[in-house]
Amino acid sequence: MADIWHEITSTVASEFSDITDAEQATRIVVRLTMAGLLGGALGWEREHAGKAAGVRTHMLVAMGSALFVLVAQQAGIEPADNSRVLQGIIAGVGFLGAGTILKGDAESQVKGLTTAAGIWLTAAIGVAAGLGRESTAVLSTLLALVVLWAVPLVHDKVARPGTQPQRESE
Image (tube, rainbow, N blue to C red; front, side, top):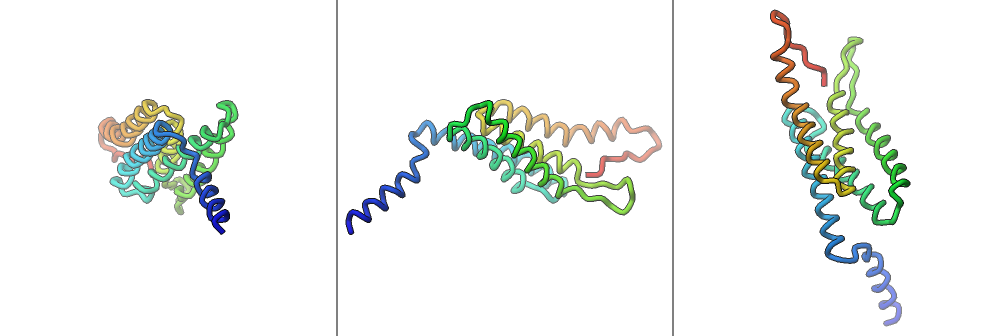
C-alpha cells in the first residue's frame, strides 16, 4: 500500500514540475502579469467609453495570448514553428472580435469595429508580452491609448465648421 501512495505522490509531483527554477517562475509571472496589466489598461479605456468589452475581457485576451506563446516556448517549439501558434491566436481572436460587431437597420450603420480592433490589438500585445518583448508591448499599449483618446479629440477639432462632428461608430 505504501508503494502505491509513493507512486501517486511522485506522479503528482512530476505533473507540477514544468517550472524548474525561480528564474523560470519569475519570467512566467512577469510576462503574464505584464500582459494582464496592459490588456487591463486598454479594457479600462473601452469600459470608460461605455463599451461592452471592458477590463476583464481585455485582460483575459492578453493573458490568454501570452500564455499560448509562453507554453509553446516552454514546450521547446522552434521559433519558426511558433508561427502556427500565432496564426491560431490571430484567427481565434478574430472570431471573438467579430462577435462585438453589430450591423444596424441602416445600411451604413455598423457598430463595434473599434472594439473588435482593440481586442485584436490586445491579443497582439499579449503575444508580445508572452514572447518577452515587454518594451514592445508597453509601447504598443501607449500608442493604442493615444489612438483611442487623442485621435477622436483631434478629429472633433478639425471637423468642418457648421457640421456636426461624426465619430466612427464603435
